[in-house]
Image (cartoon, rainbow, N blue to C red; front, top):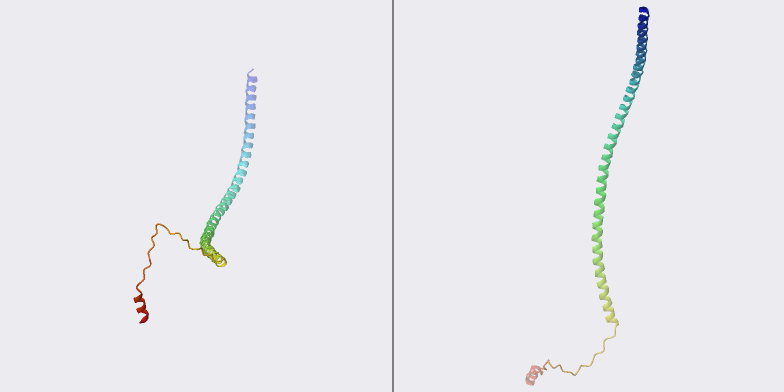
Length: 156
């Protein structure tokens, strides 16, 4: 019975050792697999890192170009805006001048129309003087110098 206990214990040890060895082999295989995946991941990280640097560099470069173009276009736009403002002011001044000239011409046309109307109209017929005396006006008799002075004046 001692032998059977020993062989059962040895069998258990062997079975246990075999399981440990199998698990160790499986773990070694997993470690190799993980190491291979780590190497692949490192390569991918390096490629992506390089690509990130390239993309970032291109982005910064394009951003700087965009800022430069914005500044350039802003200066051009300010120049155009200045020109448009100047043209607008000149146009307003011209409109004022044209309005003044128009007003003068309209006044001259009106004066000419009145003149032509007066020249082309028949003269008004004189009205006979009215014999009415206005009560509030007093009539002053005409005073003449004596006749002798008038005659003496012509004789000299």
